[in-house]
Length: 66
View 1 (tube, rainbow, N blue to C red):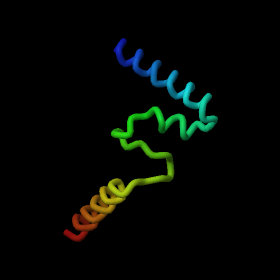
View 2 (tube, rainbow, N blue to C red):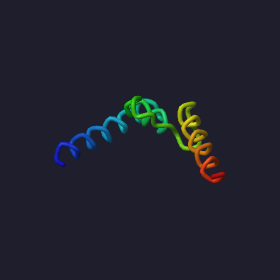
View 3 (spheres, rainbow, N blue to C red):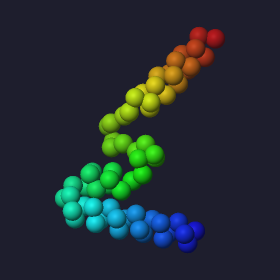
View 4 (cartoon, rainbow, N blue to C red):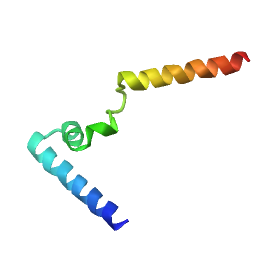
């Protein structure tokens, strides 16, 4: 738990420093957040998440027909 708290404190500090440089919270946050996590701003999606949603919707429709 202590390691997680240290990590979060460092991440918050890095985001604040990035904001001071960029003067844009969105840019600051996404420049610090690891890209591998696949985070996107609210209202934006990437192609893989659209595919996942459409696959899930298709599966739900199939189960409704049975």
